[in-house]
Length: 212
Image (cartoon, rainbow, N blue to C red; front, side, top):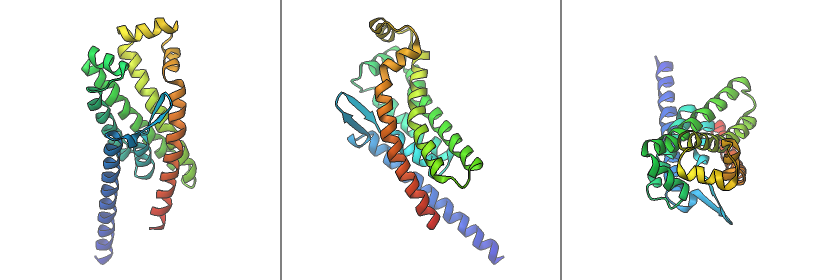
């Protein structure tokens, strides 16, 4: 019928639009990952902004798109790890390539899945509170990124010479306290910056898509 044809056409147009939006976010993730656009140097702290496209994708498009973007994020991180000059990354890749893959890629996938699940749950529980959903999703992505990355790092590499050296140097034998000493301030700064940008972008896009 004509009504059925119109419905199918609208569905097709919607799917094509979502694919194009996802492709743009993937391109943005790649651009940020391989250029200075994805990193903000604040004195001695280098804040990563790569969780922003993941958060925006999970909020605006959905959990599957958030998962795909987090996979791209993880693969970028893994690929760049081979040429990294960071002492911790060098130690990690020297100790175990498989373990490094689990930390860099697996941690980001868990971040994307969790952020998408949180946003989806809020959408079902509070369908009329889009701004709140944007806020929580924007905060969740960078926080979960740090949480899963560092948790897997400690789980897999805690007994390596580099981590044990840090533990002895700081006098901290508790892995949780050691994580806080390593990334505490940077994690807070990254979360603040990424949350503000992700919230602003996702809120704007949701308003735009609602009108169009």
